[in-house]
Figure 1 (tube, one colour):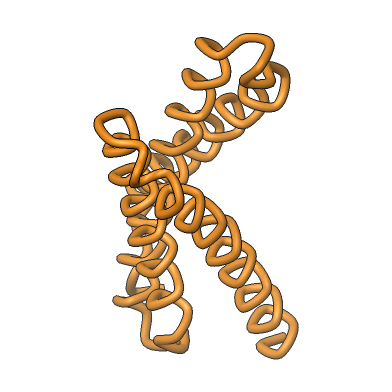
Figure 2 (spheres, helix red, strand yellow):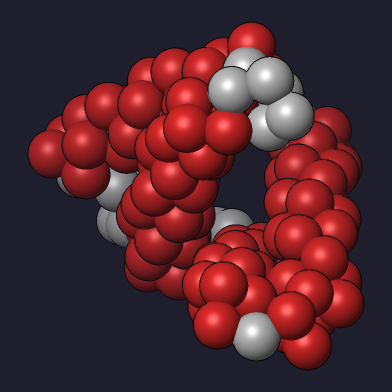
Length: 127
């Protein structure tokens, strides 16, 4: 595969583990019980997902046998996560950003689910 190299695959795998740890910390610490650990888990998860999506999208864009809608969906996931983070930070400055932060939190979730479904469909069709 032209888009993948061992170093990028290894780095992506590390970020997958990091993201899973962040997700676990996030899930085990509801924000109303332990806000600090919830936010720490969310941050680690966020960094992991964005790094994974960047690496996978770059590899998929270089690969000739992968349809271009797959890396484009990955870029959409990155955009939604970054917009969510931006509005979440802006919400600390002004409450008026709360609705946008909430909207992009859901968009981050739904874009990631769409990315998973699209990759699952492509994997099923490609075999």
